[in-house]
Image (cartoon, rainbow, N blue to C red; front, side, top):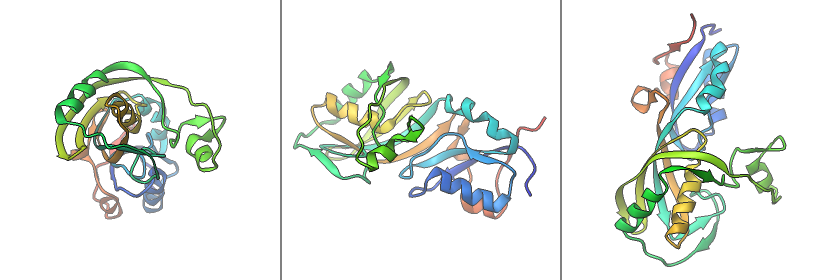
Length: 225
């Protein structure tokens, strides 16, 4: 039984839900309580802060912390999930340039109201939005105030495919940002990949893998006084 209270900075692998990663750590360490400090999509990889025992009470605090992401956006098509795992629902033949994308990205820096994606963990009447979406049930989502401190286009990878770095407030949806930038470019957008490189003060360079945890080779940030 793992009785200490504190945090583990996990580098979550892609293709795994945040809860699935938590369950693996739970079976390995056998703590009394465990939970992640803010969902990272199964497609996403990178920093997922895990709270152990009394540190699980810090959940709300971590949801509000600023985050940094690197994401690959593809312009010209949109899926129902706004990521590569969904079905294509819109497409056109618009070709966008690096300068076009760079100029539009700058417009999204600052504070504004953002509409969450339908396929998200946003709670509506006790259920997650994606649960309604999977059932084909239409629900009304409410926009939420977010703050994007910087939205940089790091490079163009291929035609219509760009690597972004986004520093933003907690609660910002990067898939929604992709959708909204695409709309400003008169096209559609889909997020192909995403990595969270920072959550609050914790960075990916300080993270560990699930294998590290299984081998007992990880940094434990104690919150015990």
